[in-house]
Image (cartoon, rainbow, N blue to C red; front, side, top):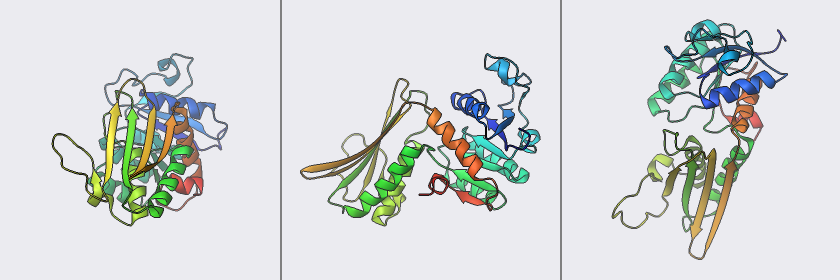
Length: 269
């Protein structure tokens, strides 16, 4: 076990953090060496296993990421933009692979992540499932094949607790559609409609966000023309797909050259 890559999970107490922890603990390809949570959280200083309602596992939850990153080969991070930017710098110092599933990162945040990637491997994706990343590839190809007679809409649905919109996955799909058409998403995105908005602009890529219940994640890319529609869809029913993808990315990143990668690289698309 000691020769297996050591993994640290940030945001350990969150729903995604706990899913990541269970995934690593169940794996025979990695070992859990640390768990990080925010200062003041009830779990700090306690054994992670008992915090999650089970037996002790010998991993103490800490609010000092530098300490645990130093003994890790990878960090799995699905937290907040502010936290992720800080973790990126620390993971780079430790030369640990930093797998980022955090969404809502600003251009300034991304610039700081890119700076950290000069020193370590960073794998960042708005969604780490195989199916979604296949959907991204299909969206790019369909957008390339269909001209602007087809309007493009990205419709996404998530649980009531999600704090950012559009989702990171929706933006991945929008970027793919824009790339297929040879345009920049920032120039054609329509991210909100309310009131008398006027007719839709030709070539725009629209986004709609639904929030409610415990929806894990649903994404449709609609290509709509007069008389016909092409709809690409992915439905996630288990957060485990994201955790398994994140672990796959962490293992893939071992020994790679410093730089920014995404799940298309990990999956060989």
